[in-house]
Image 1: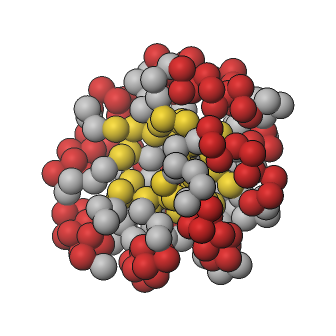
Image 2: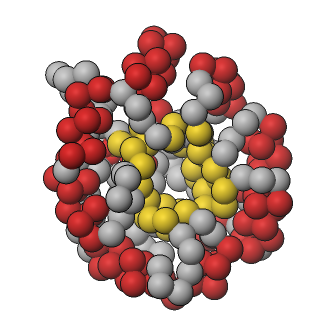
Amino acid sequence: MHKLLCPSMMVADFTKIKEEVQELELANIDIFHMDIMDGSFVPNMALGVEDYKAIRSLTSKKMDVHLMVQRPKNYIKMFFNLGANIIYIHPESDQMPTSTLEMIKSLGMTPGIAINPGTSIESIEPLLNLTQNVLVMTVNPGFAGQPYLDFVNKKIDALVKLQNQYNYQIFVDGAISPQKVKMLSQRGVTGFILGTSSLFNKDKGYSQIIQELRQL
Ligand SMILES: O=C(CO)[C@H](O)[C@H](O)COP(=O)(O)O
């Protein structure tokens, strides 16, 4: 199965973002992962609209948006206009997540849901027939460099089983080291958000790292 490898751009070096994007493209990554935070849904702020525009102007590869914000519906058209291909919302942050997912789809983008470590499968199951990507958070969202939460593996296994009934791909986000890429791809995960645990600030180049991750 082809792994979808997605650099988490909140940990890229913005002092040389053009070179970062070019090197990641050369390394043949699949999707640029863009974390948007409002300081309310999560206790941090990360990328913003100007960062989104900058990276969009540097690449024609797919870009997602992980909306860690209250009332994500308010921002769907804005990110559509900025050239987003995939939008993840957190169901807890939205009064009518079904309507927001329909809106993302109707604009021709891929609808996704992001599930916090403390969010149960039962609470999101009604949304699974409206979503194409499920982003399982393996840390509490907001900060890079946190430890992986092993208890989430049980939820990943349940989501892999439910794939028989619905049509979605599973992505994981948070402390995704090479060991976790191997373990989780064996479990049935296809998409991996790569941050400080595997891709950025390492003593190897992106091409070598990406090639090694594809072989795991
Ligand atoms: O979503 C995130 C934080 O909320 C980041 O994408 C992720 O945590 C970055 O990866 P790492 O944990 O390996 O630094």
